[in-house]
Length: 299
Figure 1 (cartoon, rainbow, N blue to C red):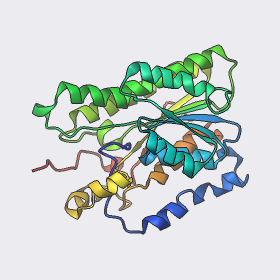
Figure 2 (cartoon, rainbow, N blue to C red; figure 1 turned 135 degrees about the vertical axis):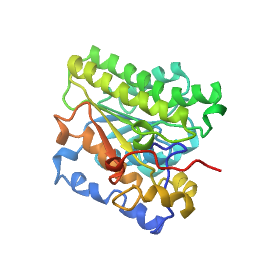
Figure 3 (cartoon, helix red, strand yellow; figure 1 turned 60 degrees about the horizontal axis):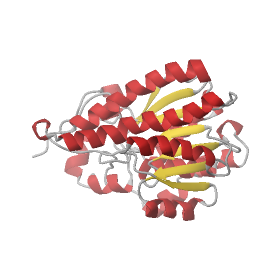
């Protein structure tokens, strides 16, 4: 799941300060030059949803590995906090991705920001959600969720891909879309719009892989986390009565941290994955091996 209402967690079992100090420790070899396949020096990434949650973690991990990151979010304060934390290689770009024109503009603007040089990598992580019973779903909620979770990925990436089509092919260009295992592959009650948006994003990923791979040599993949321990998720899933049934369906016995998702994203973006294309990688501790919706209907 992305950083929206389904970005979720079990009650925290370790101090958040300890988690933050170790969040990017697994990337130290790449930064030190010991693992060239996970080095992104000289590349620039566009990351949507970069102000918080999984998107922020992905942006920070890319910066840690030498990448210039144009981070897109709708809240300037969140992006400025990222700028202070990540430094000069993080370039904030404020945009409301629920608006189609803003999506295309963000993709085009990112090409010139951060010292120019185009965009090599795109991570579509912006997301939102609405918890409504099927009979109560509103047109407004449906449109907002579909627009942010799927349409934004389409038109942000399209704007960048048009630039790619105008420039000489370069190695290492890649796209990763952040989807969801429980919502995009299975189903969850009271999340008609969210599940539909992530299912659509999965199909969009396949089409993007077929077209952009063949015409431009761009690799396109997706990651599908289960409920993830973002700050919002920790709060939303703090009650063991709620988190317990979900954890019971995860063989590894815990929810992923945002850094677990970032690991998968960076791997798919990296040169270690030169022949991984059109894939949807679950980051779910084995949840998808069991399958089936497991969240109870709310009272």
